[in-house]
Image (spheres, rainbow, N blue to C red):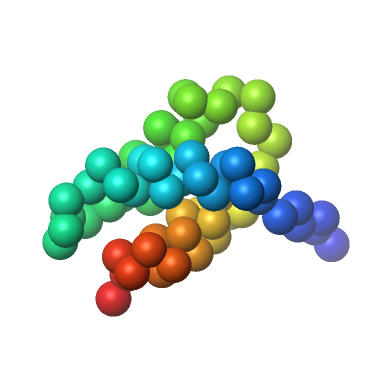
Length: 66
């Protein structure tokens, strides 16, 4: 059993800031986004799976996913 932790609103804001750099219609690499998040917040304890889910959720909320 895994203990899934919800990412914080601050992290969601950071993800949104990263996604805001993309132009409309650009493809955003999850791998590149994870790398940027890890570099910006090396202390982060969230797993890659949790971060991937957060990136997808934030991009959907921003209307970036199709």
